[in-house]
Image (tube, rainbow, N blue to C red):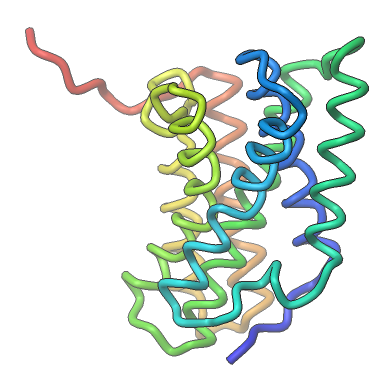
Length: 204
């Protein structure tokens, strides 16, 4: 079973995911092959895990060359440009917030289309939004950003937006997805601006 989604949203999401993967590689001084690997796992990691869990095979990016060419091309261009100029950090965070909202809704809508239970739909939304970044950080030897306080409401935003999308599913697919994406974006941007975060787990 497949799910029809606006293609430009997926292309936008994997494009920004690839950029963040390349910039993570820059900090580790890896070669071009390593850059491409990190770009690919960041862009496709969440969607791949989602499709495997949902049993929707082959996974989305294997069904045609378009997404793979997008990520590869984006990674190569970013690799060249970032050697001379790094994009503003705040602009990249805002773009990544949009990507988180898009990916979370893609995962949640896929769960709804497959008729999964509400908790599973929410889980698929969160997995789609955050898994690629987790794999990227593990490969670069870092504590995944999603587990750090300074990431400011990342997984929390995806979880909240996905839950809202599921709760409003009866009002129509478009309304539910827009409301869920709006909540993800609002929480993420508020977290960035006001530096909001969940309490740390630490001994006193």
